[in-house]
Amino acid sequence: MERAVFGASEFFSYEAFITVVRGIEYVQIGHIKEANVDIVDIWFDPWKVSYKELLELFFDLHDPTTRVGQQLQNQSFIFFSNINQLAEAKQKKNELKHIVKDEVITEITPVWEQINTWRRLN
Figure 1: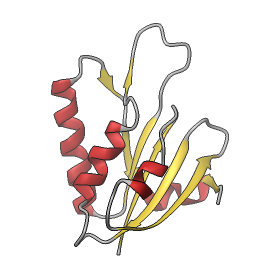
Figure 2: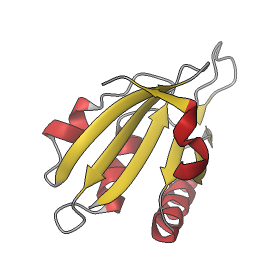
Figure 3: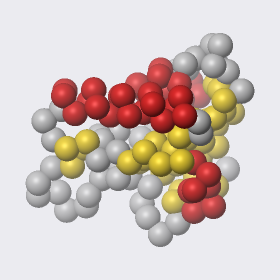
Figure 4: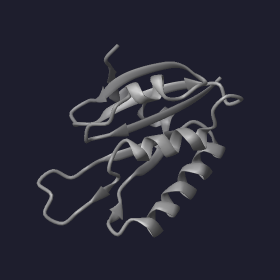
């Protein structure tokens, strides 16, 4: 089992991780304290679904950019659990920079530095 943790300030459906992706064993949702950021904490079987596939789904489920004139700034987070996840997250973020015209605001940070900052909802 491997862990993937993502967060975003605008609505994104954690249900998609449960219903769409084969290989996800457990999903827990939460919320970062004092911020409008929803967290999805996923345990998955890397033999059935890759971390890269989960990254693709995460970016498909929310807008990771900011635009001039937005009243509320989006927030987007990838909380990596190991060095391989860090490398894949950075690669995906760099790919998006060449595709979208707005700034990609997704922050990439270790999960263990943030684990106590969110409240679990289920």
